[in-house]
Length: 121
Image (spheres, helix red, strand yellow):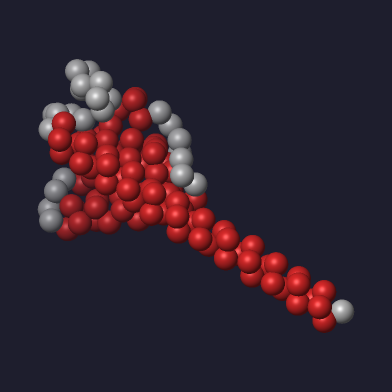
């Protein structure tokens, strides 16, 4: 009976730790997706494209799983919070956050894609 109980608890611990490591992996990958979208936005330097890159980064990160979605939300909230603290417009920040949420919900980021943005992005 003790062996059976021990095996049961070990399987619970291993199962939970497996999910934990999966979450961490997804979060790291999601962070990388957010960074890639940010660097693409800076490289493109295209007026009116920021909402697209916000949505795309959040979309790509959320596709990784719960860890990626969590990382995208934390990064997006921190970024918008910092911008508001620095005095950037509240309306623009809220529009960015809507694009972020849209991407995390799995909606197509291309709805924010401005006409003329190179196909590379």
